[in-house]
Length: 431
Image (cartoon, rainbow, N blue to C red; front, side):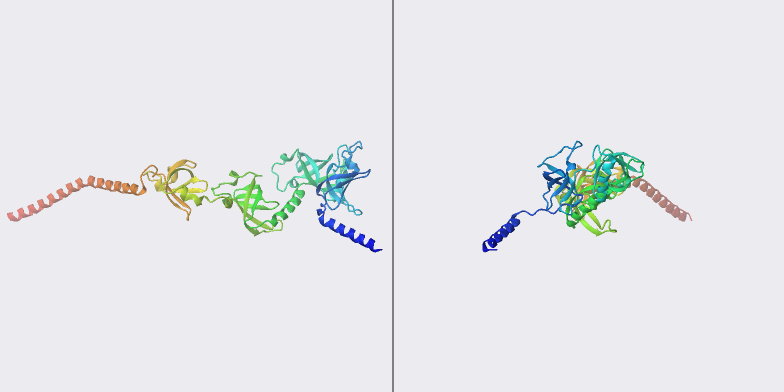
């Protein structure tokens, strides 16, 4: 090799290295079972070659691209959607499958494809056609299959009828041949297995951003008397009823519906009891809302007269909601308008709109004192003074009513006393 050849080889190597550095890096190959989309590069009698934008090229059987009459349904340059079923050990090309089974195919043609999906753990699309005692009847590419009720969803299905008529993705759980009198194999499907795998994949992503203080979007999955369970992405958290909002909530179903999207904040992460749920996550929506007590004094200064709704009734008074998250107490002594009450329900009803006057606001203790009796009247000091005056007037009236009898009794007693003494002196003189 002369100097010129050596120089040309070095120049070519340098150009190739520069090209590889400037060329954008292609993503890793998709995994088996992953759905992909790519552009058809060429079609031969046996294969169709697809650019997936990955390191490896895709290859699909030409029969997958033809209709029942053998005519191509696609052409070069078209976009093709398929599923990765494996890798060719010789060329390294990704093996693709466009569909499993198909209209007009006999069971002998469909079963090998279903078996391949079963062995490769690939999902298949099927139609739920009806229900029986144990689960759902499913039509899998012209063949009858069965999905147990426990495998139809992640949780117990209260209303399986809602799945009838839906096309869903399933995993083949069991494939048993030779037991159906020539009608094909027994095929048992599971949707739950597929959902759990997807859930685990999402959970891994969620755990990367899971920390106290994180704000996440989730979906309400179930409701109980004590709170709501929220799917954060493969992991569930608990939103306690006390953390739903600043407004007092009796039951979570008054606020949420199943499937509702919510924004929550992680407030606590504890170790779980088992591997299935390695962490216990406490959530809050209340922490994301503005605290209404921050503006309580400015919104309801002392002396303000306003309207509120009776939220609770107790023996000692009524709690009145002035605004979402702000409740004040009307003590029973401020409800009866002078009448003695044994219980607040004697002067108000739950849900009733009442006029109240603010007597005081304590933001530290989060308490607001209210009065129903003082609405439209004078200040509390004057009202107390008038009440004391009325009490003194009543005492004077009672004393006046008793004094005449007292005076008569006193006069009678005095007269009787002097009479006796006079009799004594008279008897003394006679002696």
